[in-house]
Length: 449
Image (cartoon, rainbow, N blue to C red; front, side, top):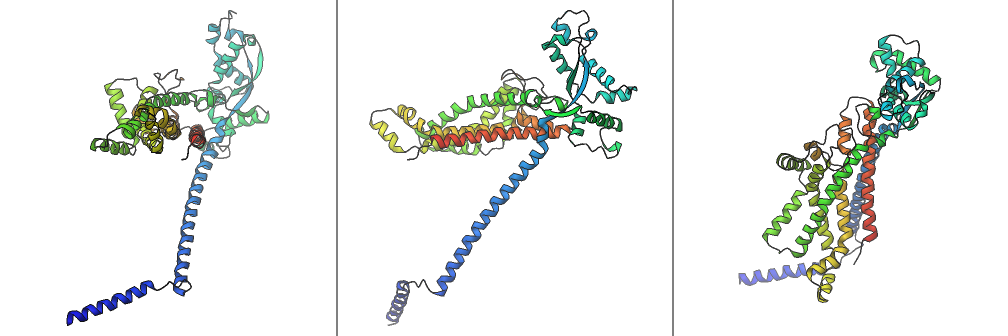
């Protein structure tokens, strides 16, 4: 009897629940209206959070670009000083031989100093003369030598020539040195400031586009330092990196995606490739130091070692991007090729790989851009060395742009601050170009099925 009553109660409760479930929703009820209003408010808050995040990111990006640009734009211009230079035959070619070797060994630095002494005849003491010679850079004598070697008829003439100034005078002309502060708080004394003001009053000081910054290698003198050596070193390094990482990465991706058996071994390989993409770059530098320098005894500070090291770091990125591109090719294309009698290799090489190539190239370019901006692994293999000469090949000693920036940022001279920011601007321009090329390739050759 008790069980019967309990069963009746359960049936009654189930009927009530069933009736409630079948009850139509009243979308015009106040409760539903409040719920809809809450959902819309939450959606608006979510959109606002996203918009604030984007604005903060753009603000940080603009602040970074503004900071770098405001410090680095002045490096593209250099102060030059106008002087009357006498190409004394007794100094350049006493025996009138006209031999370029004799002219090349002449004391052109003495001609520059003589021109300064003639411009300021009141300067007589040794210490003042030493300060006076700082108006013009030591590299001015090399410019004079090149002029005379190109045009030997200058010998015996007196010409008005613009000579590159020293770094302190360049900083004074650009406003980075305040001449109104106490003499002990600035790098130029009162006499040097007075000489500068006299030259400015005579119109003998001007700023010209700093071509040397783009055409010369590194130097201890800031006004003579350029990025060409580092740019050439980056080119050879990336060339070695691309030559190694691209074919190996693409072949590995093809094998893993198309031919490898799906077993535990391949799963372990795939997991480790994904993990290698997240390994800090300094670890690859340590690996390159041990394997390439200590075991294989390859030349230190050479682009070939840097390229080998960066290839290790770039390989996982290319493999992952290539596998994603190959996987995106529809299976129907493979099945159609196999159905027409193509072998698996022909299917991959004739159909799958060409269709996946835009995605593979995009991933490769992004990997190369990452390698171009890397510094840590190259520091470990000695590419932080001070190298003046422009490398002529992948085996010559060289440095790269990020390491060059690191070297200049560590220099105490004020003039290297603008050089550092200018080099960062050049490096960012290269990175933007490479990423832009990746976007262009993806947009141009992308196929949608």
